[in-house]
Length: 133
Image 1 (cartoon, rainbow, N blue to C red):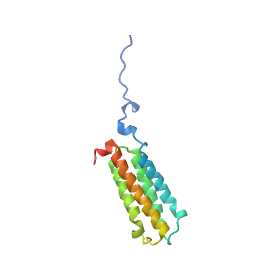
Image 2 (image 1 turned 120 degrees about the vertical axis):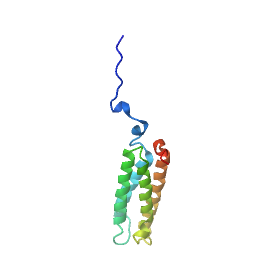
Image 3 (image 1 turned 30 degrees about the vertical axis):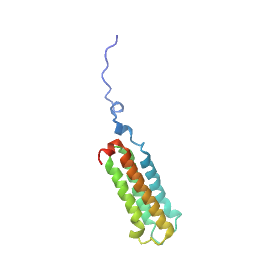
């Protein structure tokens, strides 16, 4: 007969469900890709002079917030920030004065709306984040 062993209290054994969900939320991965796309969109999308700062800046912010959401699976704040940044991206053509530029405006509208949708999906999908609603 062997002596009982002490419970394993290492980091790997003490992971909660929220910890295990890190880096696995698909809506946050999609928002990371959308952020990268938006940051690079000025390379192939035509628009008026100076409009390119909007997608580059907001794309970097979307990607950074998506990384935050991926790293902290239990943080509903990260999903709310994604929704807000998506709304800013959607409104950027009017804020930046390039709503009349079809390619530039539609890029911001589509990506902004998608970021909002996937931010909401990420917020409602996670049990830890549902508790904060």
